[in-house]
Structure formats: C-alpha cells, structure tokens
Image (cartoon, rainbow, N blue to C red; front, top):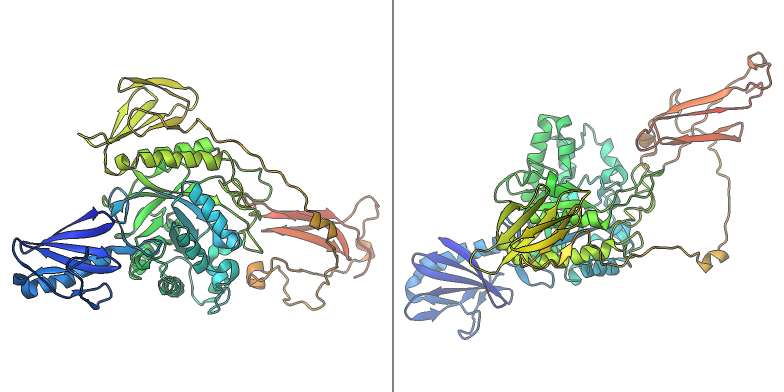
Length: 610
C-alpha cells in the first residue's frame, strides 16, 4: 500500500492505493471519512467516526464516505488499517482542530506541512499567573509560535506522594493559556532539569530512598522517575493538553543534557539513556520526543542542540530522517552573586539564528525569552533572584530593546524564506575567503532564498552575487528571500533602543518595618564533634543552621601582649558563614560559584573561663 498526504482547501486527506482501488481518507469536522474511487457506480454505506461510532453522511456533503460495491470485505477491512494509520499520525492543534505532528529530515510536520518554528522559554513558576497572558502575547507579537517550559518535580511533589499544582505551579493553566493564544508548546519533563533550579528540580526525599543512584540504570531511581513522568503525562492527557487531543503540546523532552555526565556512569549511563527514551515513547503522547545534548538518543527520539552557536557546533541528527532542532539558544547568561551583568548582543543572537536556519535548522528556542524571578528558595546555589534579566522580555516582562525588536524582524525575514527553506534544494558557494552564500531553491521555479554570510569578525566586505553587488558588515548575514533583495542583515539594527529605570513606589513610604533577634536554640538537635552535611540535616527545609561549641580558656593560655588576639579559624566547603563569640558578631565569609570552599578567619576577644 502506497500512502501520500495532500491538502485541499481546509481539509487534509491521505490517499492510498489498495488492490488497485484509490482510497481517500478525509479528516473533517473531527471525524474520519473514507472515499474509494473507481470508474463505475458507487454506493454509500455507514462510515466509522474517529470515536468509533457509526455515522451516516449525506453523499452531497464534503465528507461523505463512498465505497464501490465490488470492494466487499477487503475494502471494509482496509478501513480499520487506514484509520489506525491516520489516527497514529494525527494531532490536534490549538483551537481544538485536528492536525498532524510528525517529522522528516527537514523539519517537524504540523498540519501535514513542514514548519519553521520560533520558540521561547518561559517558566511558569518564575512568573505570576497574572503575568502569563501578557508574556505569551508579547512572545507571539515578537514572532514566536512556540513556548517552551520545564516541569519542576520538586515544587509539584515536595513530599513523597503529596502534590501541588496550585497558583504559580498550575502547569495546566499555563499550557491552556498558551493554547488559547494560538501558540504551540514544548514540555520538557526531565525530570532532572538543571535550569539553575534548586537541586536541579529533583525533590529532596529522593535522597532518602534506599540504594538510589540518580540518573543511572538504577531500579529505585527509574521507578520513581517513571512514576512521576507518567503522572504528568496522564495529567496532560486527562486535560487534553497534547496536540493529539486538541492541546498545544507538539514536543516533549525526556532527560536533560545527559551527555555532559554520561561518561561518569559508564555502561550504566548508556543503558539508562536507552531506557529513558523507550520509557517515554511507551507513554504514547502522540507527539515526538526529544533529548537535548544527547548524541545517542534512541530510536525515533530526536537529539537536539543546546548552546550559543549551534549552527557551527551541532554535529547533526543521529539518524538521517530526523530534523535539526535547537532547544536552547542562550540569550544571555544566568548570573550568580558577584557577577557583572551578562550581555549578549541582539546582533550576535540574530547572527546565530540566521546561521542555524541557513544550515538546515528548522526550530530555534530562545533560552530564556523571559527569565523571570527565582522566588522563595528555588534558585540553585549562588544564583541570583533575578533570572536571565537580559532576555528579550526582562524579569518584569518588559521588552528589552533592541533585542526583542531585532529578533522579531529576523523571524519575519525567515518566514519570507519559508517555502525555499523547507522545500528547496540547498547548496553553498564561496564568494571570497571569508564570505559564503547558502542558497535554497526549487529548480524551474521562482522559489529561491539566499543567505550571504561574512564570517570575518573585523572587516566588512562587498561581494558580487548573481550579477548584483552586496555590502556585508563584519560578522553578519544578509537574508534575501528572493535571492535578489536584502530584507534583513543581522548587524543592521533598526529597532529603537530603550533603557530601564526604577522609581521608588510611594506605597513604600507607608510601610512599617519590624526587627527582631533570632533566638539561638537552647537544645541542640545534633551533637557531633564535626559539622554535619547541611543538606541532609535540614532536609531542604531551610538554608540556615546554628553550629555552637563551648571551650574553656585558662588564664595561662591568654597572650600577655595586649595587641595580640586569638584567631577564630573555620574551614568550610560552602556556601557562607556568620560567626558570633560570646554573643558578639565577629565576622562572615563565603565562597563563590567557582570556588565554593572558603575559610572564615577573624581575631576575637576571649576572656578566661567558659
């Protein structure tokens, strides 16, 4: 049986040849209908709807089922095969309309068509629910059609078996908001997510599971990982969040950048990756799965790229039928305390994206498009409360210009090249030592797009291309949607610049502040001659612990010279320490993200006695 997909007006149908009978399978009004066409009289019979119910359709309607009398049982039997084939491929886009999401070597296939996808990361717990609609609308206005988010295990299951999906943790509400605004979603389940998030998203209680080894071919970890992932998938299915049900989710991710640690696990790492991918596929979400930074992503799971310059660093899909997807294009750099502001220019970001699409990329995700705020104790060690504030939408959801506008213009230019990029044949030509042109065109048609790239980071160049002269600023790419006219250059910014200033709220003048002294516990919880590992001691309920000790100072131990004082010296492996002696503040010390260990060392005044 040979199958093909076509589009006719707003209907999508598949055609098949079955025993010399032409079959057309229509998807219309959320129901499957079939038409068998022969060169003689037809007869109408009941059709099966997508739900499996018998349905009589008017022969004059656009979605009638017509079968030849001679088709008999073989044709009817083929209905079940063909309907199974269709339903295995179908998904439903935002708005509840049935579409299909698959992929080939060029791109994801949505609605039966290849698509260019521009995505941005917005994490639901890093902004308030009231902010979600405006953030999503601003992302859409910026030319995005996909929102990407992680799922954060430790906020949803802080205690084993006790779940929280309320308020800013309402994942379903966030996804529904995405769909209601006509956008797609990528759901990154992890469940280890990194994300500069406390414990990488893993809940503390996992540490107390006997014999557990995180992210390894370890039965206790795999059991709890599969249990949580299955719960989230079941929740998404129940709420009809997957595209296969009418929801916005077109991609799901399992694990996260595992290649960076896989060697440490040796053979157990290899088998764990295979298990994780196969486990995810077995959940039957109806949408493709991805693994980022995972060269050995198994079977149909798509390996994707993370980084700043994936157009140059990505080695490509691990199978020829997979598309090139970029799951994290870092719009800045997350900051830790002590860091200067991290800036990545709009020009550099645009260059990386243009280069990616000129080298067969079809999806890019900006990490982050809106970073937001690390509320409460959710930030990883040393990570600031403000997260990716230099993204196109800042911590408060305000547009960062020119980054937001320059990328919007880029998306518009790339969409003008869509037909050529997705269906044209690529070729590369060198115009000079530093300038190359990447061309996508369909021979015999006017479909053509070109990307003129100057890879010299210091000097501009003027080059000839197809009889015309083009000026290229240093390290820039010009986009020509018709292989003639420049509509965009990555170094030419036309968006206005803006700056942000802070104004003190008048309400703060009326605030009342209270101070109190924290009482040092009279009874110690743990008695030890050595400091205990803090995380196991506090069980991730607090960042603060009192360590106290008492010494007896003999008068003979006191230095007779008044200018020489005893020194308190405490070595620590992180993160910070504040010292008091005899109730008086002595000093403090802290480590850093680069060097977490430190030594607190201060002179102190001691008196004879306890």
